[in-house]
Image 1 (tube, rainbow, N blue to C red):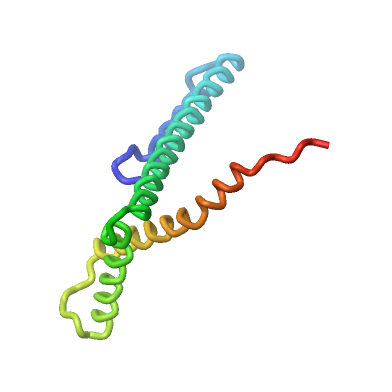
Image 2: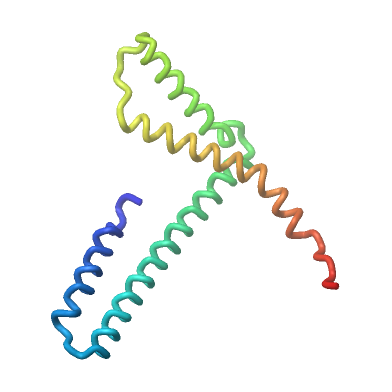
Amino acid sequence: MKGLLNITAIGEILDRMLGKVDQLVTSDEERLTLRNEIERVRIDFAKQILDAEMEVMRKRTELIAAEAKGESWIQRNWRPVTALTFLVLIVLHHLGALSIAITDQMWDLLQIMIGGYVVSRGIEKAVPAIAEAATRPTPPNR
């Protein structure tokens, strides 16, 4: 995720700290305690990052689901229409019929839109099945 802390860099910092533990601490018990604390920090940090990523995905899913259920045609269909427009531009470019260059940003936008469309279609198909399964009574244990 762009804009967040570099997870790899933080992992490298924690690895360096673990490497210095042997140089700074002479007692086996203190060394083990310090190593365990650094690992605990690493695990807590990784859990917080995963929780944040899950929240972002949940919010995106809610947004896409709301768009798919929207009342207006444009609200429900802007992603596929825009994606198809970009697809046509790319095909025209490769056929030599378009004089503008296809930029990295255009590719990125197309990937985001197609990804959002695929997710929204998946949600649209999966949500009714999940809702039905959740409301189905569970059979008694025998």
